[in-house]
Length: 250
Image 1: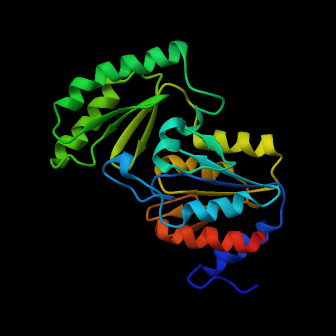
Image 2 (image 1 turned 120 degrees about the horizontal axis):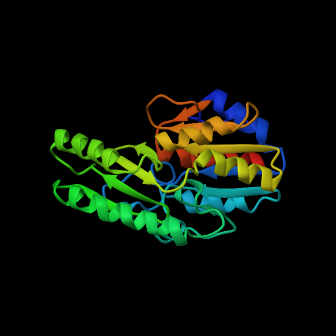
Image 3 (image 1 turned 45 degrees about the vertical axis):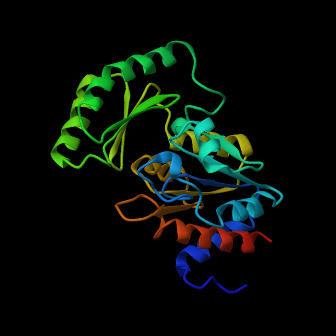
């Protein structure tokens, strides 16, 4: 089978090398990978073609598709409107076996109450309360000095026991130390996967890249330093990558 036009030859070779291994885990972040980044997270719908190609991959015997996101699982399912025999991992791995409850949920709510006045005082900033974390978004803050100051202030106010997860124009503060790397390793172990593929675009995805082995395929979407072995430009290129993988899996 010939390589896919426009796909880096090294990446094409890497995909071909894992396509015949079973069980195979195909995992991906959502925002910035399967969907373009949006100022309004609720508007981040999948790139055209994503639903169809994920369904093709998930239908192959011995292949598991997993969505691994910083979003809560309910938010991810609602926003993406994706459906299929997928594994859903939310809140950077904290939502693996169900939503947070009890003391951790109380700790999250107290953090939100602490940060709310600071965020409200910065025009354009937004506070997002997730199942296992609180996120301070500054993408729409026009005063860049104020944006930076808010993120610094949020760090200062949060208890030192909490986990900082900086991202693109956002600081997420988690009440657990779960990360995407530990979630991926857990999936690999649970499935007994012989190989894994992971696609991500953000700082938090670096944990996932580092967690996988030299025989796996890791792909950074977009610019920036990365531990991933390969890179593609944007979600449009992700569709082409996944379509090529689907062809190889046949």
